[in-house]
Structures are given as structure tokens and as C-alpha cells.
Image (tube, rainbow over all chains, first blue to last red; front, side, top):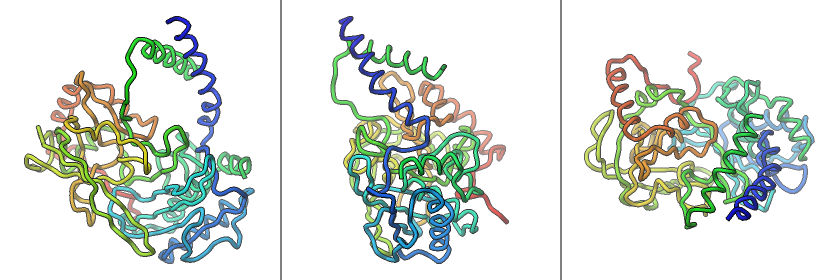
Length: 173
Length: 214
């Protein structure tokens, strides 16, 4: 019994310690696609949300090692970040879901922006899109007081990733 | 350092339990947000977030205690571009209504995948048949056909020891953790005590979505 107990303790510590170092960051453990080119599709988006997607790609992604210039398709699903907006029935404003996962790579994902709780100001729209597309490229929420769209509790005035977030993206792309 | 100490204590306690209790299949408390053992592959920004119980009661149209009777697939809604939402319907026999407008003896609650989990992951324990649950519900979601939970903070399971268990898949939520340390009796009495203040207008409901800029 005693040997089993200590084996369990040691094995669990060995398994958890690397995970703890990941949790200390706000990386989720995946990246979008196998290379640095992250594809985005704007699926039947309203003009405001289409603009917010372009804003996010140019202001938040492309200053990092992600390269998404020229990789935004219109109405072409199956990308690493298909973005939709609609009057969805649910108590959420935005959602990201990986649809096709291969170990640490999300090959296909969708971002849903719920217009039910709008209209959004441009600042709110960019905050929402920034967070959901931040999940798409591997960022999690971060529960500290910093100025980022990934912040928890939610920051509706934050349209940008913080340096902390972009450093992580540089590290994985 | 304190966090590391807590991890070590948790491991020692967990391993002590694992060497003395029989193993068996267990349902998870919370919906898995990704494949079992893998990273989270689902995240969301909800329209409500509560820091206190009173505001969650005030925002609910019904706070009920009941037993899960059936779980089945609900409606599938298709939007422009082929995007879909698939709901799960939960039938609940109401044992007691703690706050809000009367629901009757039976309610149907529709759930999206925030509550049921990433595709293919095990069903959370609170959806087991005959499970007693305490729910904070809304019937004000546009185009919804049934009650929906307010958010991931609004579903609690009552275990065999009459203790409340949070089903929130989001870690580090203060309110969920606070309520998850209560006994069922303590939580029930807290809701009933706060209900009077809600009905008196002392505690206001939360507005859904982003703050108004008007």
C-alpha cells in the first residue's frame, strides 16, 4: 500500500509540473494550423464584424510572427478560423470552437459572434472579435489586471492583445 | 509557493483516497471544453457574469430545485452560411421553486454545448437521471423555446451527502467556488433569504451583454 501511495505521488507530480508551467501562461496548448499562416474566413458577416475581423488580423495578429496577410477568404469555410455572426439563441456574446483537432494543432475552427446582444459599438465589436480570434490562435483567458481582450473579467474596452499575449504568439508561431 | 503547497496537499489527499477506495467509471462534474486529457477547444464570452448570489437570483426568471428525468437532443438551428447550433433538452421535475415566477411541476431546460461539453466527451454528472440539481434559469433568451441556464455559474448538483457541487467548467470562479462549498440547506436558505431583497427591489438584475453606452 505504501509503495503504491508514493508511486502515485511521484507519477502525478511528474505529470503535473510541465502542465503547471503551461497554465501559468495563457496558452491553451494548441496552435491554429501547422504553420505560421493562419487562414480566416468571413462567413456572411455583417459589415461591422467583417471590419472587426480585418482590424484584428492587421492590428493583433500580423505584428506577431503569425502571418495572415492575404489569407482572408470570404465565404469559404474550413479554414483555421471561420467567423460567423448571427442572432444566436444563447446567453453568450462570442464563442470559439475547434472542429478538427490533431494533437496540438487545431486544423479547423469556427468563431461565432452573437448579434442578439448588440448593437455593439466598434470598440465592443473589436474587443469581442479580438478575444474569440485570440482563442483561435491558442490564447486562453487571463485572470489578472491587464489591458487585453483576453482578460477575465471581460474587458469590453480592450480591442488589443497585450504584450504578454503577443509574446506567447511569437513563441508558438 | 502557496499554490505549489496546495497542489502537493491535493495530490497527497487524492492519492490517499485512490489507494483505499474502489475505482469505477465516474461522470465529470463539468462539461469538458476539449477532448479528455487534451487542451480546451471551446471558449466563450458570456453575457452574464456574477460576483454575488443576490444578483444571480435577481437576474433569474426562476430558481428551482428538481430532479433530472430525461436528456434528449433538442432543436438544431441552421443560420446563414450553414452554421448550426444543436441544443440538448433536459426534462426536470420541480421539487421546489426558490425564487421567480412559478414554473409548474415540470420544466424543460435547453442547453448549448457550453453545458454539455465538447463533441464526444462524457456527459457531465449533473445530467444523470434522478440527479437533484439547483438551477438559476432564464426564459428571456430571444428565440429560445424553453428555459436556459443563465450562464456556466448557474448550475449546481446536490450530491448524496447533501452538499452542493459546482458544475462550472471555467476554473477560478469565485462565486461558483463559494457556492460549491455550501451544503444544500445553506444554499437553499441563502436563496430564500435573498429573495425577499430581490422582490423588494433592493437587488437589481444584471443587464445582458456589453455595458450600455447610452
